[in-house]
Length: 166
Image (cartoon, rainbow, N blue to C red; front, side, top):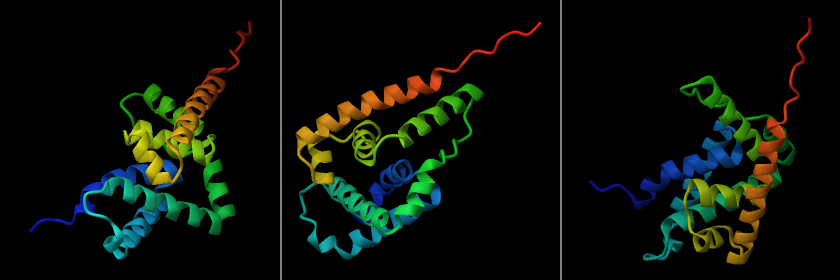
């Protein structure tokens, strides 16, 4: 028995939701709400069009709606750095935690575009369609997001060295 075409996109939706929400439980809720909406609105999807972009557009809209309805709760969650998965070395784990903190400091608009292009490897046109913004806006947001991420990472690496006390 063949599975529904939406099923193959669930891992990507989960990964994007986790990066977007910054919390595993909120991400799971976001994916579930996205899949529920996609299932009930599947008749509106045009066969031959990009199903992945359509699903990411739904997730974006669901997330924006959740953000509006739970603004205070989401702001509290975003202030907390997400827990880093266990990595091969301690320095890898620290670098990942630094990256997650730097990502969480980006505006939602910049984080969305950066994650869709860099993590999900979507093309500018696909991101444009998924977020409902012009391709030029995608490119400018991506450029600003990369610059701000580099700046955030640089700020985190500026640690004051300890002085030797004799």
